[in-house]
Image: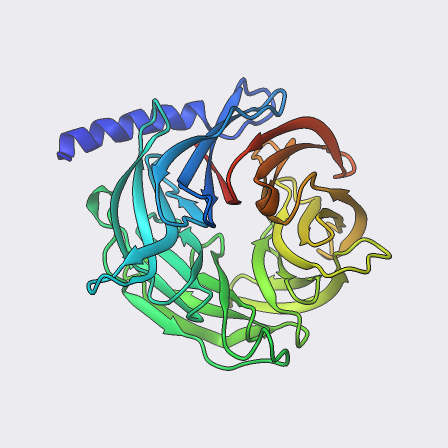
Length: 385
């Protein structure tokens, strides 16, 4: 693509950003587009739909790009035309391996065009993010127990990894924690630190991040611990920046941390269960999301098939259980809250649906809308501007 064409596309992108910017009080925004990562044999790639912000209605999902198990997605923070996905790619010998792919979005139709793919630096990539400068993609490899940083080149294509860090060690659960399993990768608001929740180590590893080079180096201290056997999975910051939360897959808990933004240090201050009282079956948590207001936290339970709702204490960051709401399907692996804070979209991976719930802004509780769409094996939702 020529530089002129790229410039024109970015101008259109800024126009699209206005069309799909998060709604604030008094805004007349009506819709937001979503992209849906999928996995499993029924998956054909990345799907797209449009959310009506007034009613919570989703348009029928359409295939936006063919891809091999594009489980998790990340949207470029400043260029609305670029989307990145983890998944399976083919190496130089023709064998399948872990990779990250780049796609360019057509602002008019929502369709995605494949740009290129690079190795993720390990097997089984499961989570991806883009740093705030828009210069680097970061990826967590569950199967390989590693993390990596890849540069974003001119035009949105990816270059080979500039940093690959292999985690080492184990923890107390012999079935799940014999080796490292990096399960998510996140950055702080200042773009100075990277946080990798590793299920196999019972640690949230912390790295200093050089946004110029993309290089990662261990922080001091290099990690925060959770309860042995808890199995940290996904991680979320409070919008105020003083607190952070990790949802623990094996232990069915959420750990609350105080966060020292200057030093990148996480200090655990609370652990609370996610399951409904009296639940006796097998269940494992998946996703954790803080409401845009900072008043509530939500966590998904795969097994009890519920969303746990917590109130957040504004002073201490600690959680208090509010309710548990059925997701209307099986295995809610991922869910999101839209930027207006009015809708929660739950992905039921095992029943091939995305179900929309309203959010009561006073209590944080969920309410039924009757809105849902069919998507094969949904695993991730991302809003675009």
